[in-house]
Image (cartoon, rainbow, N blue to C red; front, side):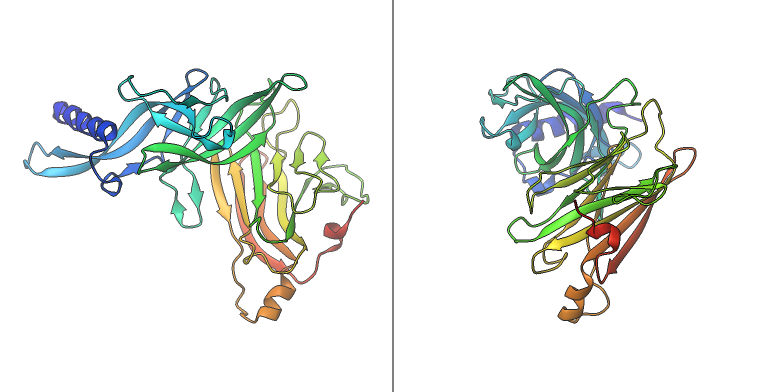
Amino acid sequence: MNYKRYFYGGCWVISILFCKMVLAQDLVINLYDAQGQGIDVNNVQINDIFIDTSIINPLTGISEWVAIPYSFVFRACQSDPLDPNTLYLEPLLTGTEPPCYLSPLDFTDTQVFGGMNDNNGKRQHWVQLNNVREYTEQPEITTTYYNMALELNLELLRLEQRDKYPISPPSINSISPNHQIMIVLSWDGNRRLDFDAHLTGPAPGLAGSFYNEPDRFHVYFSNPNYEEVARLYTDDFSNSQPEIIEILPPLDQEKFRPGIYRYSVHHFQGNGNFVEAKVQVHLWIDGLEQVFEPLLPPETDSKYWNSIMYKWEVFELIVSEDGMIQIQMIQNYAPRAPAEIRRKR
């Protein structure tokens, strides 16, 4: 293999990224296998960025396109210096890039993962950043940890923030900062609708109560925590989103508690239905994402459609004794809210 040809091809790609002399649609970049880590407060290294590069086949002399992995250091900046939600990462290709509004976030211990999915397959232009830190000084210094999803802007050749989810601080009892299951519920905020996330799961020895079934916990807005195994993060106000449920291994254990975890969404109030409200459920397991969206039932009558859309049973997570996790999609709708969903304080 003539490695010089790869070197010259790599230089050609670098010049493209630096000069931006070609149309964005002519550049094929795949982040699905990307991985990396923070190298200091403001810089992140991302490896295995596959870029289609033109090389000359040494046997045939014919030009071919080959996907070759590259590594780049990215600088964390903000489009708006006062808004932390305008985060973007831009590659440092020459070391002489003009200054930017540096992000106040801390990326020192950040981990980078590709492999994000949606309902249509691979999101080749997305990456997730785990364990990003944010410091708040008032009334006292506190630290908040986030996972973030970023999408590649091919026109500007930079990664731009799309979602940010708070997570629990990493502890000495965790395998790694991303060893968790996170479920994020969101919907169209322009509609006056309210949806609630509900999770039931294994709780051996738990007595039946107003909130829980025997041997099974039930986490939702009126019962937001079960020990250190499942927690719901949401505001106390109606129509607040996103609603985030986090599942963690029990304290001092490395594996998730075995059993069946069942996730559903309750249409709490408002006219309309799940599809009209563009409801989405994002499931994150150790840095990998799967997105669930409600599907139209076979019946197309609008009255029937609205009447069955009180509860959406989305999926089950089946955790085996060895810690393996199986995702079982349900996509079932209930014509009325079952008793455990209706419980309130």
